[in-house]
Amino acid sequence: MNNTMKKIELGLFPTPLQKSSLSIELGNICLYLKRDDLCGIGFGGNKVRKLEYILADAIAKGADCVVTGGGSRSNQTVAAAACCAKAGLEVHIVIPESAPNVTKSLITLSGGILHTTPDGQRSTLTKTMRNVAKELQAQGQTPYTIPVGASSPLGAVGYVEAMREICSQAAELNIAIDHVICCGGTGNTYAGVALGAKLYSPKTRATVISIGRRFAHKETLLRQIHKTEALLKCESGIELDDLHIHFSCGKGAGLPSVKGWEAIKRMVAAEGIFLDPYYTGKAFAGLMELSQYETLHPGENVVFLHTGGMVSLIGETS
Image 1: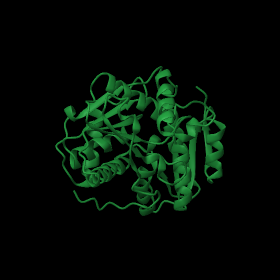
Image 2: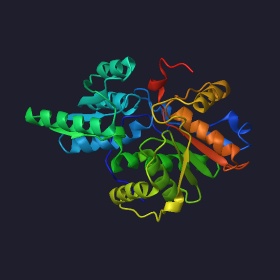
Image 3: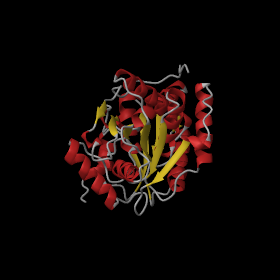
């Protein structure tokens, strides 16, 4: 596949693919950490790869400002503020009133303009984003709206490319990746990972760990993947059986879990690497469960995608 889609350079890529000392503890798998928390802008994380493509599209379409939003623990809001600052775009961020003060401060520090909603429901955020965009248009501006979570086919392209990057790094290490595991909120990152795995390493099993009690149905994920294929002008032959979902959500999205905190502590003790209690901590707890259930087998090369989330760790206690 030849990806000639335009993007702007925001992060520092490739990010490291790091061998973990936790391999023995996790049933003698060979664990690697893909460090997208270290991508060099803001607090890092998975949104940066997505925004490289999305903001390039905004600029190409003549936008002079961006409208986006997210829930109280969303990484999208701070990442969008930092990336828009670097790209020279005015940004309007819609967040619930309950969002932590640190999130609000980081957005305004980046030059973002805040708009608050009474709750963090996706429908409420989306409606407010739409209203903000209309007001900006009425003032003569040209806004570009980014969906909550940067969840769009363009966003998924970022993680198709991340899988190409991972496969290239694996080749340099002379290993084949048996399993790649990532965190799932809206499912957009996973859509890119699953498609990228199918395109660049068809024998690699891609699994998403849902951090909420509900997650996108496989049919919805497949439609999202097909839209991404259309953008990339490729066909992977991916099917429903290629999609794997594991739930490790505790009481649900937006709430830490006991297993998540245990996973965070385990990672810090072993590697000095922080995960967060809402996304990556739960995701790594899910990986630990998969090793216990023997879904991951001794000797397999397993990649855990560290998608950031450090903003939501600040001020938290277990």
